[in-house]
Amino acid sequence: MRKETARPTMETLAELAGVSKITVSRALRGSDLVRPELRERIAEIAREAGYRMNGAARALRTRRSRTVALVIERLVAGDRPISDPLVLSIIGGLLETLTPAGQAMLVTSSDHFLDSQIVDADGIVMLGQGIGGKRAQAIAASGLPMVLWGSPLPGSDHAVIGSDNRLGGQLSARHLVEGGRQRLVFLGDAQHPEVAARLEGVRDVVAAAPAIIAATVPCDFSRAAGAAAIAELAEAGVAFDAVVAASDFIAAGACDALIERGRSVPGEVAIVGFDDIAVAANHRPPLSSIRQDWSRAGRMLGEAILALIDDPEAFALPGLLPVELIVRDSSQAG
Image (cartoon, rainbow, N blue to C red; front, side, top):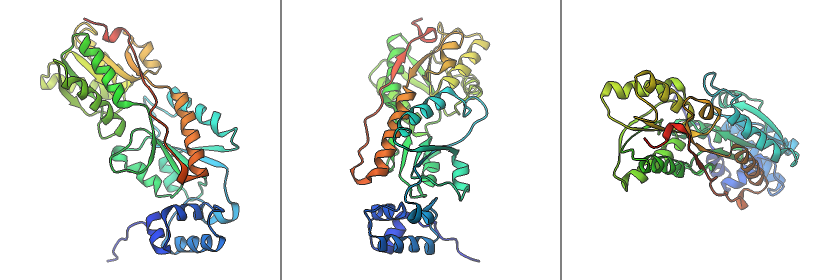
């Protein structure tokens, strides 16, 4: 039986070539900062090692493709499709930055990017990291400069730009506690780095207040998942007077499920979502939520990937995007 070997990484090529990882990255992108003979040698080592980098074999001939790939972790046909205004706002912000810089943008899914042998780009902007950041790790193996939208993972060296998710959790919890709520439940899957940061923010506030987190329920970013979480809490007999949801879709599903069970919102249970998309304002009752500036996020991602492509060694991450609590009927003091 043949033993499976690990997929070669950029670190592997650096060791084989006796150079630094950044030199390998530059060589495979055709950078003039690397001597032509060294670029050729590194490209040959990459081919012999079976290293897969989109466009690497062509990089020495074409230099740069003048294209940035926007890789979306997954395309969901339910509550959050590719046509979601949130995603479209980020795309708009990216185009505002990339187009004047002479860069085209290719939009694809992570599955297609990983399966395709023809995707060619100078860099990658990725929306969503996957559970535990595993999907981002797979995309990063391409060796291309990459910027992620989300929250940093411990031990990861990926360039990550995101909103202040922990602050968002703090704002939600503080608002609820100051409104007299004492038993909070958190709905969302903390295996996603952004959700984990929001949960930590809630814990920060509860630790210093006369309140507790009565339960946490891992769930997907959907109405159905929010409703299922409420059913799970009811079956377990968990008493709570407030819900902090990791997304507005979760919040909407939870709110509907509570009302169907005869519990008043916000009288008996106050609810705060996250993202402040249209579903929050249009829901009945309207949902309080944490607002993120998605257009600004797109512009920051565009500026970051251009800087990373231009000079990885000089690249510096910008700060976190601020978030804002938008108070609506779902969390007014009872």
